[in-house]
Image (cartoon, rainbow, N blue to C red; front, side):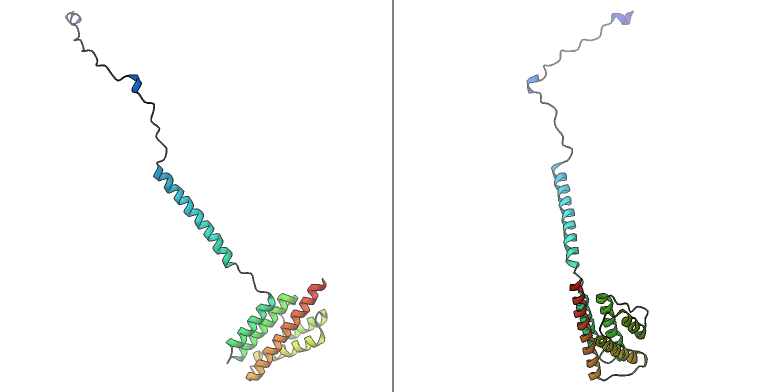
Length: 183
Protein backbone atom coordinates (compact mmCIF):
# COMPACT_ATOMS: atom_id res chain seq x y z
CA UNK A 1 0.00 0.00 0.00
CA UNK A 2 2.73 2.27 0.30
CA UNK A 3 2.82 2.65 -3.35
CA UNK A 4 -0.83 3.42 -3.57
CA UNK A 5 -0.46 6.20 -1.11
CA UNK A 6 2.22 7.91 -3.13
CA UNK A 7 0.77 10.38 -5.59
CA UNK A 8 2.17 11.13 -8.93
CA UNK A 9 3.76 14.49 -9.24
CA UNK A 10 1.56 17.16 -10.75
CA UNK A 11 2.46 18.45 -14.20
CA UNK A 12 2.57 22.17 -14.73
CA UNK A 13 -0.30 23.65 -16.73
CA UNK A 14 0.13 23.77 -20.53
CA UNK A 15 0.98 27.07 -22.11
CA UNK A 16 -1.66 28.71 -24.19
CA UNK A 17 -1.41 27.50 -27.83
CA UNK A 18 -2.14 29.18 -31.11
CA UNK A 19 -5.59 30.31 -31.76
CA UNK A 20 -7.67 28.62 -34.45
CA UNK A 21 -8.02 31.93 -36.25
CA UNK A 22 -4.57 31.63 -37.74
CA UNK A 23 -4.72 27.94 -38.82
CA UNK A 24 -4.47 27.32 -42.57
CA UNK A 25 -6.05 24.50 -44.54
CA UNK A 26 -4.09 21.64 -46.12
CA UNK A 27 -1.30 22.58 -48.54
CA UNK A 28 -1.84 21.34 -52.12
CA UNK A 29 1.19 19.50 -53.41
CA UNK A 30 1.05 19.20 -57.24
CA UNK A 31 1.65 15.79 -58.79
CA UNK A 32 4.27 17.27 -61.12
CA UNK A 33 6.57 20.18 -60.76
CA UNK A 34 6.36 22.97 -63.36
CA UNK A 35 9.77 22.06 -64.81
CA UNK A 36 8.61 18.46 -65.30
CA UNK A 37 5.53 19.64 -67.18
CA UNK A 38 7.64 21.95 -69.36
CA UNK A 39 10.11 19.14 -70.13
CA UNK A 40 7.30 16.73 -71.07
CA UNK A 41 5.73 19.37 -73.36
CA UNK A 42 9.11 19.93 -75.01
CA UNK A 43 9.52 16.20 -75.67
CA UNK A 44 6.02 15.98 -77.16
CA UNK A 45 6.71 18.95 -79.44
CA UNK A 46 10.02 17.45 -80.57
CA UNK A 47 8.31 14.11 -81.29
CA UNK A 48 5.54 15.77 -83.30
CA UNK A 49 8.14 17.82 -85.16
CA UNK A 50 10.02 14.64 -86.13
CA UNK A 51 6.83 13.03 -87.40
CA UNK A 52 5.97 16.08 -89.52
CA UNK A 53 9.53 16.23 -90.84
CA UNK A 54 9.48 12.52 -91.77
CA UNK A 55 6.16 12.91 -93.60
CA UNK A 56 7.36 15.95 -95.55
CA UNK A 57 10.64 14.23 -96.39
CA UNK A 58 8.89 11.10 -97.67
CA UNK A 59 6.62 13.21 -99.86
CA UNK A 60 9.59 14.95 -101.44
CA UNK A 61 11.26 11.63 -102.25
CA UNK A 62 8.23 10.27 -104.06
CA UNK A 63 8.70 11.49 -107.57
CA UNK A 64 6.17 10.31 -110.08
CA UNK A 65 7.58 7.76 -112.50
CA UNK A 66 8.41 8.94 -115.97
CA UNK A 67 6.04 7.89 -118.72
CA UNK A 68 7.29 4.91 -120.76
CA UNK A 69 7.95 7.12 -123.79
CA UNK A 70 10.27 9.47 -121.91
CA UNK A 71 11.94 6.55 -120.13
CA UNK A 72 12.63 4.79 -123.42
CA UNK A 73 14.15 7.90 -124.99
CA UNK A 74 16.31 8.49 -121.91
CA UNK A 75 17.49 4.86 -122.01
CA UNK A 76 18.26 5.19 -125.71
CA UNK A 77 20.30 8.36 -125.14
CA UNK A 78 22.17 6.69 -122.27
CA UNK A 79 22.89 3.64 -124.42
CA UNK A 80 24.37 5.82 -127.15
CA UNK A 81 26.47 7.87 -124.72
CA UNK A 82 27.76 5.05 -122.52
CA UNK A 83 28.76 2.53 -125.18
CA UNK A 84 31.04 4.35 -127.55
CA UNK A 85 33.51 1.52 -128.13
CA UNK A 86 31.42 -1.48 -127.10
CA UNK A 87 29.13 -2.55 -129.94
CA UNK A 88 27.65 -5.56 -128.13
CA UNK A 89 26.69 -3.46 -125.10
CA UNK A 90 25.24 -0.81 -127.42
CA UNK A 91 23.04 -3.43 -129.08
CA UNK A 92 21.93 -4.87 -125.74
CA UNK A 93 21.04 -1.53 -124.15
CA UNK A 94 19.37 -0.12 -127.26
CA UNK A 95 17.30 -3.25 -127.84
CA UNK A 96 16.38 -3.31 -124.13
CA UNK A 97 15.10 0.27 -124.38
CA UNK A 98 13.00 -0.60 -127.45
CA UNK A 99 11.68 -3.85 -126.00
CA UNK A 100 10.85 -2.30 -122.64
CA UNK A 101 8.94 0.51 -124.33
CA UNK A 102 6.94 -1.88 -126.50
CA UNK A 103 6.13 -3.99 -123.43
CA UNK A 104 5.17 -1.07 -121.17
CA UNK A 105 3.23 1.13 -123.57
CA UNK A 106 1.77 -1.28 -126.12
CA UNK A 107 1.47 -4.34 -123.89
CA UNK A 108 3.58 -6.54 -126.16
CA UNK A 109 5.58 -9.27 -124.44
CA UNK A 110 9.20 -10.00 -125.33
CA UNK A 111 10.03 -12.06 -122.27
CA UNK A 112 11.66 -15.42 -123.08
CA UNK A 113 11.21 -14.95 -126.82
CA UNK A 114 13.69 -14.66 -129.60
CA UNK A 115 13.37 -11.87 -132.12
CA UNK A 116 11.79 -14.20 -134.68
CA UNK A 117 9.24 -15.55 -132.18
CA UNK A 118 8.29 -12.05 -131.22
CA UNK A 119 7.89 -10.93 -134.83
CA UNK A 120 5.67 -13.93 -135.58
CA UNK A 121 3.43 -13.18 -132.61
CA UNK A 122 3.31 -9.54 -133.68
CA UNK A 123 2.05 -10.52 -137.15
CA UNK A 124 -0.67 -12.68 -135.60
CA UNK A 125 -1.91 -9.84 -133.41
CA UNK A 126 -1.97 -7.30 -136.23
CA UNK A 127 -1.60 -4.47 -133.73
CA UNK A 128 1.13 -2.68 -135.71
CA UNK A 129 1.20 -1.96 -139.44
CA UNK A 130 3.43 -3.78 -141.95
CA UNK A 131 6.00 -0.99 -142.40
CA UNK A 132 6.50 -0.75 -138.65
CA UNK A 133 6.93 -4.51 -138.43
CA UNK A 134 9.47 -4.50 -141.29
CA UNK A 135 11.49 -1.71 -139.70
CA UNK A 136 11.33 -3.50 -136.36
CA UNK A 137 12.47 -6.71 -138.03
CA UNK A 138 15.45 -4.91 -139.61
CA UNK A 139 16.48 -3.38 -136.30
CA UNK A 140 16.13 -6.64 -134.37
CA UNK A 141 18.13 -8.45 -137.05
CA UNK A 142 20.89 -5.83 -136.74
CA UNK A 143 20.89 -6.26 -132.96
CA UNK A 144 21.09 -10.05 -133.28
CA UNK A 145 23.96 -9.70 -135.76
CA UNK A 146 25.85 -7.43 -133.38
CA UNK A 147 25.13 -9.44 -130.22
CA UNK A 148 25.43 -13.01 -131.46
CA UNK A 149 27.65 -12.82 -134.54
CA UNK A 150 29.83 -10.24 -132.78
CA UNK A 151 30.01 -8.07 -135.88
CA UNK A 152 31.34 -4.58 -135.42
CA UNK A 153 29.56 -1.49 -136.64
CA UNK A 154 30.83 1.85 -137.83
CA UNK A 155 29.89 5.04 -135.97
CA UNK A 156 27.60 6.05 -138.86
CA UNK A 157 25.77 2.73 -138.68
CA UNK A 158 25.50 3.09 -134.91
CA UNK A 159 23.93 6.53 -135.37
CA UNK A 160 21.63 5.14 -138.08
CA UNK A 161 20.46 2.30 -135.78
CA UNK A 162 19.84 4.62 -132.83
CA UNK A 163 17.88 7.04 -135.06
CA UNK A 164 15.83 4.16 -136.42
CA UNK A 165 15.06 2.92 -132.90
CA UNK A 166 14.07 6.46 -131.90
CA UNK A 167 11.69 6.66 -134.88
CA UNK A 168 10.21 3.26 -133.98
CA UNK A 169 9.62 4.39 -130.41
CA UNK A 170 8.02 7.64 -131.60
CA UNK A 171 5.82 5.79 -134.10
CA UNK A 172 4.76 3.26 -131.46
CA UNK A 173 4.01 6.18 -129.15
CA UNK A 174 1.68 7.75 -131.70
CA UNK A 175 0.01 4.35 -132.20
CA UNK A 176 -0.46 3.98 -128.44
CA UNK A 177 -1.93 7.50 -128.21
CA UNK A 178 -4.39 6.77 -131.06
CA UNK A 179 -5.50 3.55 -129.34
CA UNK A 180 -5.85 5.38 -126.06
CA UNK A 181 -8.12 8.03 -127.60
CA UNK A 182 -10.35 5.51 -129.39
CA UNK A 183 -11.16 3.52 -126.26
